[in-house]
Image (cartoon, rainbow, N blue to C red):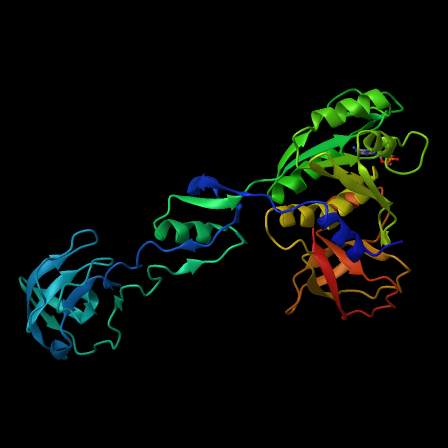
Length: 393
Ligand code: AMP
Ligand code: MG
């Protein structure tokens, strides 16, 4: 048996990061930035007023001082004149501060009478001017790699780029196998069940930035599996579900081997789970997941998600977070146990408690879980309140 960490290292070795591609900024949300972005201009591009008010000189900033209003500056409407001594220019938020203007007094701090204003008796210290380049300057960088969040898109747009270079999305082909499987909405015979796993795996892959292709179900025979692998042609990752243990009908490994799979078949010291099949098949990485829904979904989180991150140029590691146990847990055995668990808001760290049932066949429990509580192999009993690791789920 190998550890989860060792298995992850081997999975990541199955694929290299994919090349970058230019996409319009509108298509870039959630994609991984592949090259740093360099600002093409200063932001703000000029000294800008942060408030609605009057631009004046510092020397005129005296309680009760009277000033002549000699012009107006608005956003997108610069005033070409100057702010002279004894004068004020009406100014609005976002407008360039005219030459000579040293501060902006708030409109609420003056009284206006025709073309004159009188400053109030309580004046603010702040100048209310955003200096040229205060946000970023020409050549400032947004670093890569990073998964682009909405604020990153706004920043890249403000840096004056309509396009950006992101890692190509990995294409993931998902192949469910089994004579007993039918698609949801069909009319299963009494000895059949619904092929549910593919829907979770496609969603997991898409949330991890991939393009998922859910292939037609393959039967437990050679011809059907070969057809399935043919349909997976062109994918960067092929994920098979089921048929990967040592049962009579578990022929996925054999057929993939005939097609040239450099097969790795590892027993991993984890629960839930079964052996994980992995290798390279043609130009694709292949992961053979167990058919048991909970095992398949947990294995996808542990191995497929980091693989997809790695292929997009991000570190392929587990997003371990910390929580405080909301209940005592017993000692763990010789396998890392990923317990289905629930999080609740805590004082500081969230509180985590494993679900009462850890039966790995129960999708209802999995659907109520929002975390996998990580019990390291050989870990002793843990008391209520101790700090533990979890994976968000
Ligand atoms: P296997 O790994 O093929 O031996 O399958 C283990 C268990 O998972 C069996 O009970 C299968 O019926 C079930 N199973 C296999 N594939 C799927 C799937 N795509 N969706 C739901 N259950 C599945
Ligand atoms: Mg099967």
